[in-house]
Amino acid sequence: MTSLALVPLLLLAADEPAWEQAANTDGVRVFARKRGDGDVREMKAQGLIDAPPVEVWKAVRDYDNYPKTMPYVEGGKVLSREGGDKGDKVTLLYSLINTPLVDRRDYIIRLVDETDWKNPATLKVTWTVVNDMDEKVPVPKDVVRVRVNEGYWLLEPREDGKKTFATYYVYTSPGGAIPNFIINKANSMAVPAVFNAIKKTCGKK
Image (cartoon, rainbow, N blue to C red; front, top):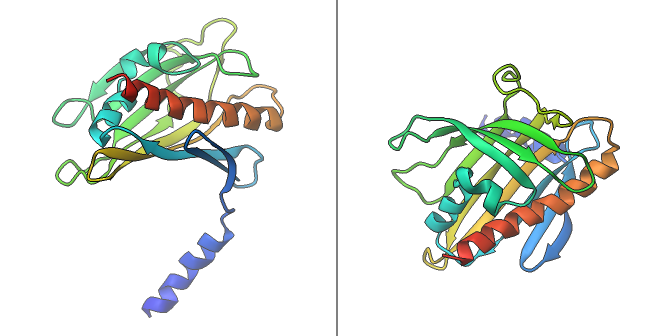
């Protein structure tokens, strides 16, 4: 019975497109793959960061300073924090973005700390876009609001916790009348830039 029960899961996994390496620069490997029936690709970057996971975690979760530390972020603010022992298990974040190849965008995302702090072998934060706050946070003039944005950071210890193997995943589309090949090109530039920004931030500490 157990073997038969696994068959549908194995078939589903076999149907998923394989990740293809899109770049390998400065120790950061970038992968892409098609998602569903659309032509906009999922992206992920992986690499080793010369800092303990907790330090990388601080950089990843320093949302207030994203306009200073993260590429393409022109402005933004934390809208709310709630839950958890520190009151920040769930964070609502607004960001104004100026990415390559497209006009300025903005978005609101809900970030959730999914780390098991009783046994934090890995640290993980996930996010999804929030699309029902246009009245509370109006779209600025000449800015397009992003309606598709989800992803995560996964941080795993390496070398007895002295270093971090990080995975940054994102699936997003800027919206508007932009060809998919332009979207994929912009994402392939932005993903390693974001990953390297975290590496650079950790290197300053």
